[in-house]
Length: 278
Image 1 (spheres, helix red, strand yellow):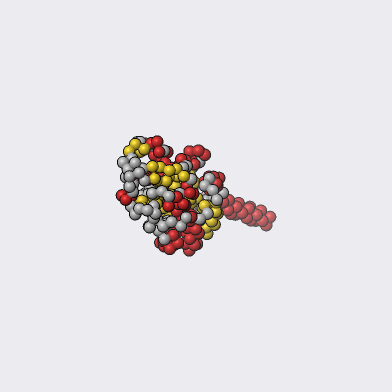
Image 2 (cartoon, rainbow, N blue to C red):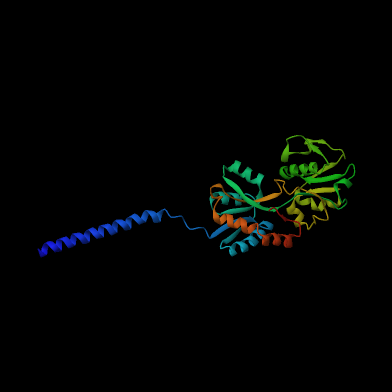
């Protein structure tokens, strides 16, 4: 009888252990399906200069929101998007939407905009005239000689009412696409870096913002016509991989970038040369 009780007790203990083991194993799948912890650190790529400077300011605001932002500077305009596509960085800030679209098309990439950054507006600059209306007949206008910015410059001259271009040419326009030129303007095509130095020799020049800044030009004093603030080529964007566009950490960074503190930093640092696009 005593032996029987011992056997029964052992069986009961074994059964209890089996139940506990079963309960323990049933909890493991639940743990494995739990959501991954939110990212608390990201890497943002930006080209050296204003883009990186504004990202640094945004990083300080992001830190207050619990997000650490490492800033990686690039010296060219191709590597950042490739690094983003490859997963080497989380976000890229340095380009406009048409540039991003072109990269996606050429590389078969899947990058998207998740927010607006800063405005880098091309403008018509002059040391001789205060408005486009003052430009007289036969004036020499200097424009960039590279295809992308040359076409963009001609579109800007059209926007200013100085010329008209063939329908549909867009940013691929050349001087041969000018269909109306009521002031008989003469176009001098120069390397983009030389345009600021040409202002004393020509009536006006169409100059991109990076060369405006490097030459110390003042858009408020010498800029007689600027690209509209909603021009696709003027609005710089914050880009991410399409599959990660809803990542909470990335949304936090956009919120930090578009904060009042960063807006004030841009105003204080660039004095109107660069403006927020948000």
